[in-house]
Figure 1 (cartoon, rainbow, N blue to C red):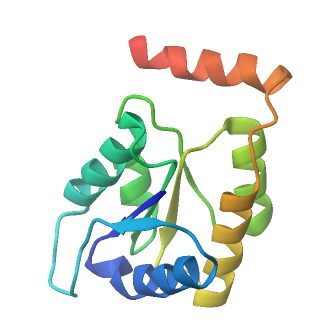
Figure 2 (figure 1 turned 180 degrees about the vertical axis):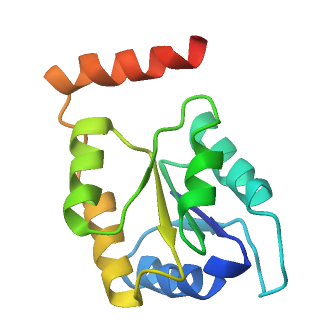
Length: 145
């Protein structure tokens, strides 16, 4: 299951990505927002990240105007490894090497077709483990500092 959410700046792209998820057979849950009225992105990030960190969702997707605010908020949550991606290679590598579990995108800076390609790479690649697992474990231990 994919948890997805946006603020007003990412609302349009979020809806395009929901259509993409539907077309490709992914189960998802939409955590808002549900229109273009101004909303605080930390509230949506909290909802999506809670679903991912609790195991209720396998992965999360967050969209705001640039992807930056959502990324900063997501990475404040325990157990979350959020990656802001604007290209397909980064989306692939962050799953394979960093075991990222939340993708953040900028609805005002990435076109819909590229965003779909980024989401495809994020959802279809898996963590490689091995030497990368040691690094991810070290990264996650920073939550305790």
